[in-house]
Length: 123
Image 1: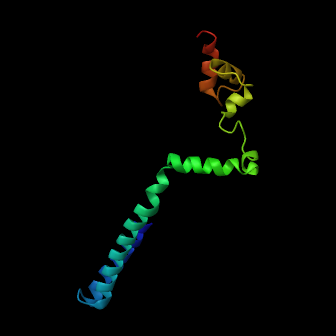
Image 2: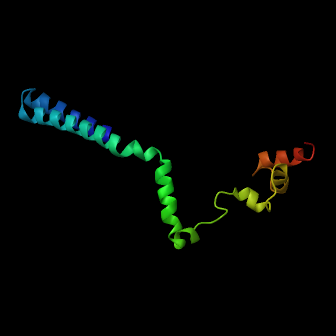
Image 3: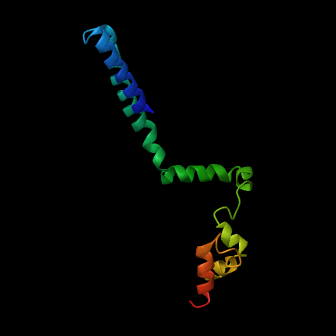
């Protein structure tokens, strides 16, 4: 989005230079605006985007401590949130047993699981 803003400003500066010339105050102010947008982009990138890509161990511990003090936060979490729904359907079975369970489904819908379920007994 920021690059689009810079390109749009530079395009407008090109139109201003074509009609008013390179020494016009409009052209110069649009170049200054494009430079200010680039500076703002680099500052925002360093301040917000780079830190948002990771969570330090210290911050994670602080968040955990805050959550422990509020039981309503922990009550809203599901224990099996990260369990694969296919494994849930198979009743907790793992490996080829899950695929064998899914082999009852149409092979067109789940051809990989169908094939693995058929071969699972041979493995």
